[in-house]
Length: 148
View 1 (tube, rainbow, N blue to C red):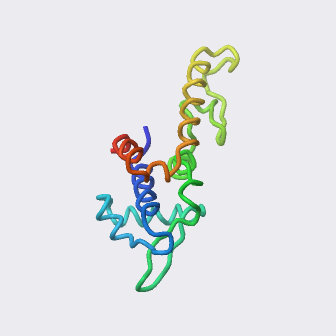
View 2 (cartoon, helix red, strand yellow):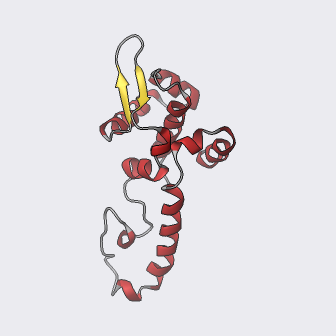
């Protein structure tokens, strides 16, 4: 399961994807529209800013904008930033591989073989689905339903 923080990040990014490219969106507007606690959203957007996903503008017309195009930001990228490795077992992680403590050998582990298929399928979906996909009205409604 993904964390609430990851769901909020994805929902905030879809709001930014729907906004005009040159018009920053204020945190308070995103928070109200998506029912996200404002202080929590500030932390999330700061994390995304540090990873080059969004940029902030100060001042009266300030707010947040996508730094990368929505079609270039995948769900998988955001989940890794917010929640960390995308793997059901530590021995299947691409970015944070760790041998399982109770494992006698990865090649003979039946559990690993099954969950490797799950991890591969999950990564395929997450890294081929973009924020732009979620922001599209028809597909976006399905993605939003899944995030709720």
